Image (cartoon, rainbow over all chains, first blue to last red; front, side):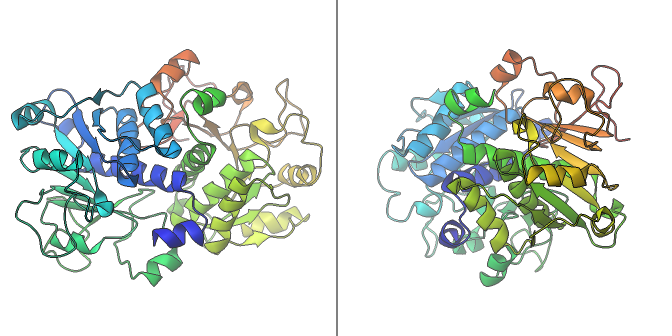
Length: 235
Length: 235
């Protein structure tokens, strides 16, 4: 579908990354409203991978900052793509802190942040989840006890049956359309960020979703095991 | 400020136009919620000029479509800029109708649409408002009786004292920061679409605004004559 958006509908990559990153940030505000956070500071860790999912994470972090959260970015392998570099600069210039390394002592992460945004691999991970520095990041994320928000596809998940070593996100944000792996999602909240998707493409790809409320860019999908068409009332 | 966003913060033009167009569409949903529209069909006319304001209008129309409005675009002088062409293609592929001419009989416009979005000139108008086809469009907009939503600066307004022949928008959406002309705005609702603007730039340019509610990308500013700091309760 992304190919059709880019080629037939002439969406731009910068435009899509901006739309998705913004929508992911909005989903985070719905899953973890500021007053609900367990820690006094509204801290979030945003782990960004080397490709497009990582760029979406950067945009998500920027919008979270404008929504009064305190994101910290971990972006160990920076993309040389000028587009991604610009998204990085926007975060740097907005004084969002970048971690130079991820503590291997998981308890430090559990103590410092309210949640982690997993923008490491997304749907691009197939076959690369074992390479550094992503492997080390995922090894850490597997053990954190604070909630994980995964963008599009939980990083490291394979298309086939799940591996018990997988990370287990509490929240999944599907971009444009839920991917096959979303069927294995067992967390609490599943959002679809696809309001901008033209009606014709939604029909073509058989995307069924409850109506988006108001002018929201995301909609909550039914919880795992929920009735078809369930509008995903918060758990 | 736009220069600093582009050069120092490395925002992209595609990104800014997308952010602003989306915010303008959200402002329209706040000023004219679907259930409040006087006509049975949620029709809107979006008049787009030849430069960046027109491109923002195209993005606004696309998002209005996804918010279940029925926008129709009038875009008589198309920009050759490939970026603007892509925004046009997105609208065309989403089956948003384009008018090939604007009825000179104003009553036809009053009868067909609930409101008009003025994305003709914005802040770029100085000195070009007399050239065709903008002049004809503005001549028509001066006489319509349905509400006008102007983007950034009402088209044709000069920086200096107002001309009695000016269009008189009911709604103004200021992009990033209110422009000087906004002080002469006498309509009902004034929105600021600048949540994405980095804090440092807001301070540098002295932008004061009430807090943006929730994850909203626009905030209502006080009505004309309202108390300073008035949060712009709907009229």
